Amino acid sequence: MTKQKPHNYSLHQLILAELNFSRDQSIDVKDVKELRHEENIDVKASNLVENKFSVALDYTYTIVNKDKEVVKIKVVQIGNFTCDPSPDPDNLELFMHINGPAIIFPFVREVIANVTSKAMLGGILIQPVNFVQLYQDKKKKENNGS
Image (cartoon, rainbow, N blue to C red):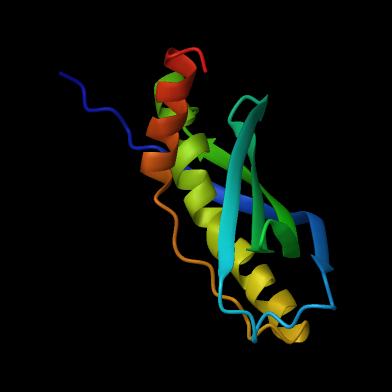
């Protein structure tokens, strides 16, 4: 039995593709007691050529007060990766939807912390994300036709 050479993934480029921030200045979020924090995460991956591929992490964070958006931040961060040797499709699928986003996510958190700090919101630190669970949930939805 031949031992398969392990895949060596490398992040070659990190691009902040989109940053949108809006805030309702009529409401001081520090004084409001019942705020709802919502997040939406979407991962899009594309195979560029041979062993090169791209992962886009689209993250939206919203603070809501009584069904009104008080703060909304949208960050799209793209990572361009290579893999040596070229991975098999299953290995690549898992990396593009679990490991790749997990590598990019700390940079998204940093952007949100910086923007919210400058907006006098106290530098919101987003909680870590379980990308394995996110991927499994996405696959379940796809398999159920939802």
